[in-house]
Image (cartoon, rainbow, N blue to C red; front, side, top):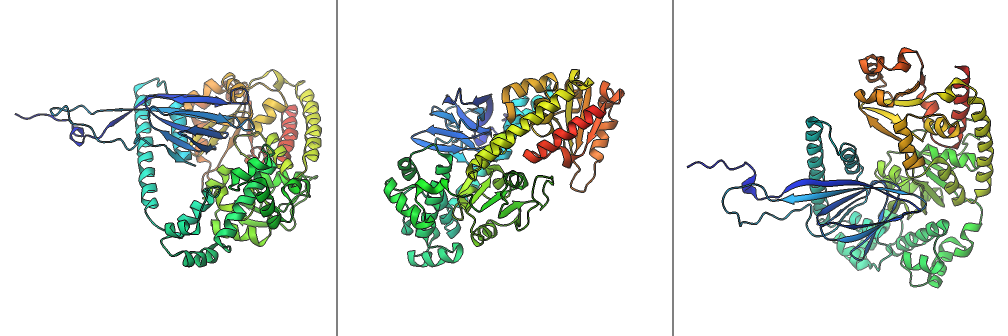
Length: 549
């Protein structure tokens, strides 16, 4: 007799199902969330930063971090009060495949839920998949339901592939792996012998190769990592000197002070009271923050050398420009050659170009100013604090608030005051509705104009953290208003034909604002930049646009 056995049943591998997906927010008022599930859980950080305390270990979480937690593990998520944390939590079910015969045969071990915690510092593509799963968690039709199934299993596949890559890399001895180990675990007791064993060479040969690659001996490199991390914590100003010493790997504050003074020439107590350091920044927005505060960056790592030009901003004269796609080694050498004393960067920007703070910390302390986890005013204040110019920043912000009040009074006298205004951004593969950042900040917060209801709901929940969300073409009418502002991103070849397809669609043509010719096409370079200088210019442009109309 022929038995029809399901194709994959005999393999005995488990089947994965999505039990549930939740969206959690950690704020200053509600900073903690307890995790305790009877299934494996995937935790992804969509924005902000914080930590996960679990199994007597603490994992530092930033935007893009992902943690896979086995079943029945209890942990606590703690949000950073200065950077509210948005967390997505996916519960993964595991079940036995349907089969015939041998019902007592055990299924194979699940590598996704293998009994130990797995931490991936930066996996933005996994976070993006989880955001899509959450957004469509209640599919309206079978097509979306099947897409969700495919997306979920793509996520499982990516986790398995990442585990296999890490396992293979962990088995290969190399100098690079030992340096990475040192950069990530400098606060622990680390010996040259242990590092040499990781590299697969003798300790004496290891020291020679290490200095050839980094320019420092292993002990010098370790000391720089620890002292620079101590500088970062001093700038943050939230810990005692003794706590800082213990966090960076020194036995007490006295030993830290000796090491600190030997390396910097000053004691920790006076580190943040001096003049502004020589600063490097990652990407042009933070360079604009510095210029507004009257400090020219020594080095800027960016895609291009273009900056916002305004009457009260000095154009950089001697700044060194480093292309963002440069190797980590090249960036490190430029920082060291130019005696950079502080690096200001968002972790997500560093990681976008294959770098991280741990790699750059040997050159200088790295201040993480979260790009998507904070609004532009918080960016400005944190950068000003880091370079000892907080008073100047507060005066600038006070002056700008007066400008906002005057602009709001003017615009409230126009027809726009009673209208619902929507902001659509057309990218080559995406149609987005904008919220409280970029031009959305100026319209909805500076000028107090009315967003679509669904945008308002998101703004009330996420405040400055609400950048945008994608919609489908058929959803246009749900987000349109009495007036539309439209920004088009060209594709890699400079073409905007993808936007023309939207403008010719029946969904677009049927919008009341389109029929009444109440649409404004805005220049990308004028309305998207997000920094103090650009926001001030956008405020002036918005008033001119609405009053002129």
